[in-house]
Image (cartoon, rainbow, N blue to C red; front, side):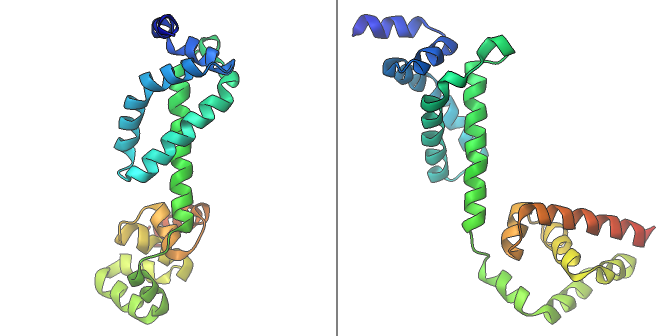
Length: 186
């Protein structure tokens, strides 16, 4: 057992992944021991929620165990560590999407949606002149997106949750609103 660990210790990550592909549990444990600390640090830099980081770590290493055979490696210019990070980054994005999909907008956001007259008053008080006039002439669905993203400083994901729309729709409406604003202000 000790000689196996010593032998695994001498292998690089690519060889460990190749052994994991063959079902070598000790190679998987060695790969995890080597890569999990820096992977957790990288994930924490992108997400402060420890639960999401822990779930992402678990899903990543489960995917590594299941998909190690698909690792192409140096033959295509990749590295085992890069492959591992790609899996982790995709799992983190998936976790963000799941969280945004199931998130509920804050109560204050629901009140704004229920009272469009108050929104118009706030908009008039916040933005004046030509910009305010152009903004008020936008279609309501474009104005809502632009107000949330530009005036309220929300991200695409937060705006999508707030308005109950898919992120792609928010991006499209934001683009259309910006184009309309440029035309109105030109």
